[in-house]
Image (cartoon, rainbow over all chains, first blue to last red; front, side, top):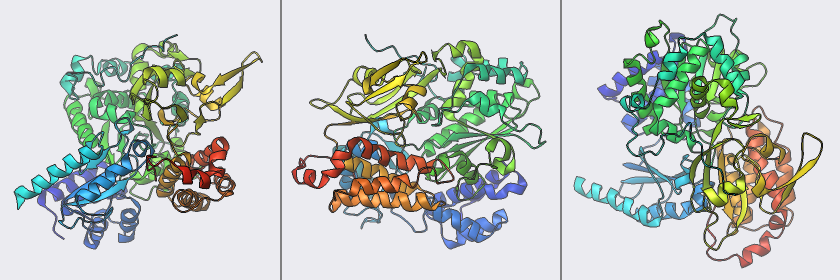
Length: 164
Length: 449
């Protein structure tokens, strides 16, 4: 596991946000930084965080396995998170999710065959007034009906084509 | 009578063209003037203003903010912490998102007034992981405020110092429960703590006295100190003071966020006038008035409530004022202000199945009744929708729900039981006849689970 100098720098900055004797509190921030860098949390990252904060690897492992946002496995290049909860579902959230799955020929929770995306259902994204909503990586998209899902998919595909 | 006009205190500039979330814009609109005046006053006086204001927490429980502050152990010699609950996760609720994204300095000013009043030297904003943009905005706003001496060392030249740090969650609803949030902030699984003895006011973050307040609540503190607690208490209705942000979603013409004096707008006015009524050709069927944990209301049912003078009054769902007390008397709650509307196209069993899936996913697993019960409720309603319903399913669901509420460490037990209990109580016939209904279900019915 190799972390970028920028990530190591941010890790060094965030640890002093907590009292020295409470270093364990930096577990979540460190895991976020590592996942942003590596795309997921490998075993080596768990041992790294434990050593860095002076705690046992199992203390980090139990955190990684509890919180839905932390991943033990790599995902596609882009992460498409469709809100599943009631307000979005009432106005077509399930159809939106199906549209993304069809566009990338994939199933929820799997990496698409072209490696470009992972489509997931997630619970309430707290933007119910503009439902259905979708979080693609860090960007929230509102009022995503099937047509908009297709348009967003096309953008991702076009971006992928320029890379090839 | 037309619906009363909105009164925007917190959302005064939200959605306003040209209003940006940086410090210069906030200062141009009178920003941090309240903090400058507050730090020149004795902290006890500020606490008194909040007590007089009657402010009730806007996160869901509606607990008195002044009382919460007064319970803080100030004799322990340990530092006092403020933890800002920005883990907005209650389905149907989306108010704090707009404060964080569009007016972060209002929140920071509220935090700093609160910190000064309570002699807090360190505050943490616990923001849900799904708000990465919000976390960046807050971090930038804190850096701006710090550079201008509105937080950090030597606030406004007074010698008082207080740091604010942003701490991101990672996708767990239970972190909205204040003791679960504290565990999460300590770097652990967010298992809620048992109370007593772990009241945050005494044994909170790192076993130190801790105040946990919601984002909206802290913004209200700023306005209370600005106008005075007595003046603030004149807004709204008795025991339900101030304004409150209402978030409307689901089957209405104009979903969105609105701010009203508490109790001045009725549910009917809100949905029919403010939000433009039901979608074309539809009628309202059910509404959840305070986030998905609140008990559902069925259009057509009535409530007979006692008045103070001993007489009674009867309210239809449309007549219920959007406050804390009347919604409570009608068997539900104002909760977090998230109003979810369902019209007559809604498959009510599927709607409950959707909610049950949420709670089964989010139960932390610490208490057996909740861990097992939420899962079984999800399985039963899921089977009803996808595989086959039985006439006795309603009674079975009720018996599971009845064994959760009141038997868990935290209020999640009630939160996951109340939807099932209320859906069965009010729409029992639809559960009983569900197998038949499914056969005749219109093909266009929207998938909910």
